[in-house]
Image (cartoon, rainbow, N blue to C red; front, side, top):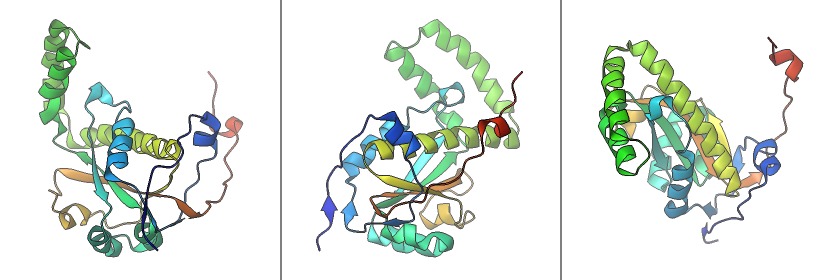
Length: 216
């Protein structure tokens, strides 16, 4: 059977996107997401918020047979997702993302999103702030921001008609260097498999709001 490369029906239905999302373990291996559509989804996911708009997330899209073969031994607890999904997106954060401060703020001025004097004032504050952050503090900020973009990516995928599964069961120590990335700079956050479900995900119990919420 030939591989299917096509866009699925998009949805703007909030309930369908958010409340019916499931973590899918088994995908139709014949469905292939084009790199054009994957790029579109990553662009939409990247509208997620981040501290000072620093956007520390970085994506490694593993969609080739060779890439999946390389990933498989590193994702020993998630072999089925890795091998049957259209792609696995490894989400990292860039520990050196402060290198992009000038570009981010300069483009904001160029596009009319920010006055130049505001940019100058903010850069005077942000540069020393980032320079003096302890490594643990920077990691905390970047993990929170990368978690936000990861959730947004899963919802965007759902809106495009695809299913996903976030995964923590993989070799975090070696995944960056296995794909030629600087392991000190690019820190792993999670893997997200994406494709079309061959077997629907199971519903799950959620604690009631009264259990998880305190009012003040």
